[in-house]
Image 1: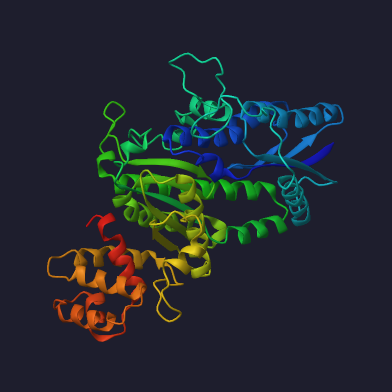
Image 2: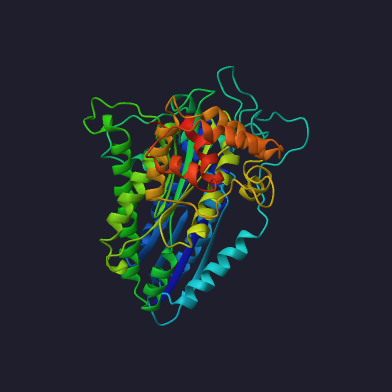
Length: 470
């Protein structure tokens, strides 16, 4: 009997999914990632899964322990070799790699085995990828992606799609992803225009769990693949429960809906896998959705035995952008925001980092901090500490106070803008603004009158007030 630890990874997922701004193609790309990790893998390796333990099938990753007899060995090796070619031909330009590691005299991978497999996968990621459809000048191309059209002799009704976009388009129903939300009776949009109008804002939200690796390492040290599989399933169940709850609470109309009467909501899941969630949502609902998701996930994860009833925490990045702004920039930014939230919270609490996109270099958050959120070394609009769940809830309440007629919004906005350009009159503008402040029990208004101004907080209030419902 031979035991193998198998790994498959789809990389550059965000680039693949958000290559265009057409929601149907985004849905199709996400569906392909889900399909490869579930049905394609299970169908291709079906003859060997009876004695296998699938540890992970989510978010573009597969990890599986195969037990192969001597009689099956040659067939298994051939099946393994064919899988790469099958995926390459079926899903053009999907970047992936697979690797396999032999486990000697044991059925569970050790920490060393996992490290070796991950090293093999990382090495293969760095190898150049060649696609069979190459061409020189003078060929018809997709005007949006600049790739070779798959319909060189198309009719008038056929779109000028390249092969990769065509495959995404054929998977645009997104059934595998929506099956995870089968208890949600809602109609999900297939066009960005159904989420927000052209000049309105949408939000891209990316949520990821903190410190999941340390729990996995403990299970690996015990060399217990069954426990690792159980833990992965429980984390995914907590994710799905939190997601369903957040949708229902954010859009109450869904609660009383039925299969025959599905309301359309301005929300579309893009990636649901393991502990990862990425969604596109109308800007005004982004804070409510994120806050409810995080609260529910923390509560549900307390049921997982390995957390000792303490539960897990998550980090979220929220990028607000105009509906027509290229989503591949926003996707890079929202990942940066999520990483920044993790770093700023030291992964000790659930944290949220938000940003409203104003410039074309929006994919690089470090550059945004330098060029947009900082005026001088001493005066900055960047706070290294991200919002906690409670602080996000308070932020929403403070926006209500900010929007009242007696609050000098225009004076505050003018003062903040003069800080950016280092106007010497900014002190005068500050004093004039403070004179107009209403008497209030709201903490941030009282603090403006008594303490040094919290510029990052005020900047976020002014910057995001029009995007948040009150």
